[in-house]
Amino acid sequence: MSYGPDAVDQFRRAASYVDRILKKSEKPGDLPVQAPTKYELIVNLKTAKTAGFTLPAALLARRRGDRIGGNVRLWPIADIQNALTNVRFRG
Image (cartoon, helix red, strand yellow):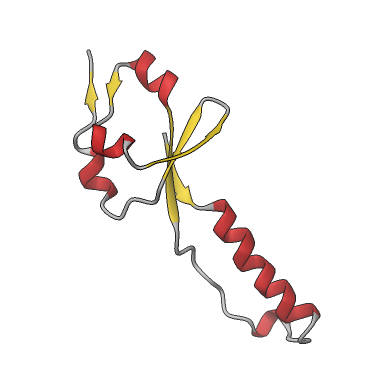
């Protein structure tokens, strides 16, 4: 399970900086530092099942549909702490 910045969004934002530097001749040092604005949760369902985690249906309903290896990408979740409090561990 991993929770972090959305990589696709980061690349899009970086492209706008490249445009500002190369086409508009702005100095990189003059551009503001930007923090990520979109985050995503990635869950490896096979590993979660093997470890005995039961993910709530509401969490799985947010699936984006694309898979990366055995991982499932979920849409950004604003209330991630509330969603994860319902994760159950068998043991």
